[in-house]
Amino acid sequence: MDTKPTDAGKLKKGSTVVFDGKACVVRSVQLSKPGKHGSKKARIEAVAIIDNQKIIKVMPAADRVDTPIITKHSAQVLSTSGNKCNVMDLESFETFDLNIPEEFKDQIHEGTQIKYWTMLGARIIQEVNK
Image 1 (tube, helix red, strand yellow):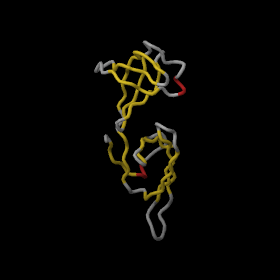
Image 2: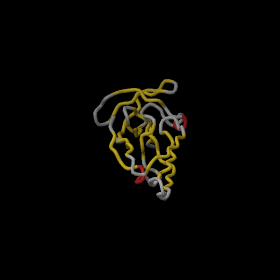
Image 3: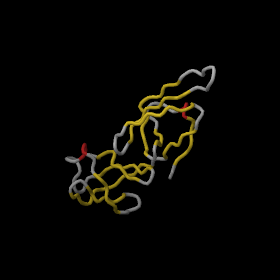
Image 4: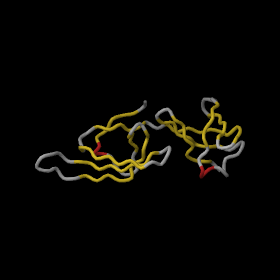
């Protein structure tokens, strides 16, 4: 897994984090004051990038959490079949299949250029170039 550690208290809205083995986007971070018997706590609300599952974690702000290393690539669609498309990476010329997200179903056709992200061993279509 391509990740790097960071402190839970340093996460900001919009940053990415790995919870339960899923890459997530942080929606909110609430920090509590240190109390008489404990350290400062962080309440992190995040949404998984792949399946939009909401995950809430409460942990000490000094705890280390993993943040995924995301690489962004461009590709061209070679063919489509149902909810999958076969694409070719424009840098390495590698061909592979990707799932088509619901919001891009009507925009992806043969010859269309897309941008996809690679994170935690998964590839996800993020944008369709027009």
